[in-house]
Length: 276
Image (cartoon, rainbow, N blue to C red):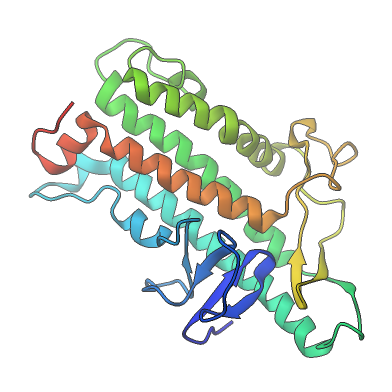
């Protein structure tokens, strides 16, 4: 889908002119900010900052170097870009459904609700969950490189890393909170896709509803992915996939910024001393 200049994309894939006054925090992407190669939109955080641009700043190296010295840091940026790419694709598919219904049923009197089947949305959800889950494991590798290297018992997963006494105490709390509030559920979603049942009820239905007079798309994820079975999934209480995927992408960008701001990591990137 081609987007005109000066539009914002809201939750549920609703496209509005950027000049339109909207409620705070509901914009998830825009064409108002620079758009990078391979993307058609710029994903934005709740504060309006570009997630794409912030990701470019991760693993920004300000000195002569060889690539092999920074594999882990580059992998972190790569995994974040992969997550944002799939978010871009997911947003585009959501907005496509909205556009279809706006053209077919432009007035609320024609229809109040509908649905379409679009398996591509579910393909992108699956791919994004895998990329996002990988971000945590790359974070583990970056942290081991700068805080665990030389110690015995290398961390085999992020679950081990969050409990390690080798991490700076304040950041250890941040990482543990991130894993408890976001990582565990993300891991459950990704594990369902990879090892158990798809995150569908057996169909690839996208529900269309009107939000403030505009068509919006909703695809529910199960509220209980830890059940690992579509026979027990609770889709009724689960989050909308786009809202969830945008939230987790924004969180991982913020967490990764905190990782690369750690004194040991920042010193390696910049080759200079930093304040403890």
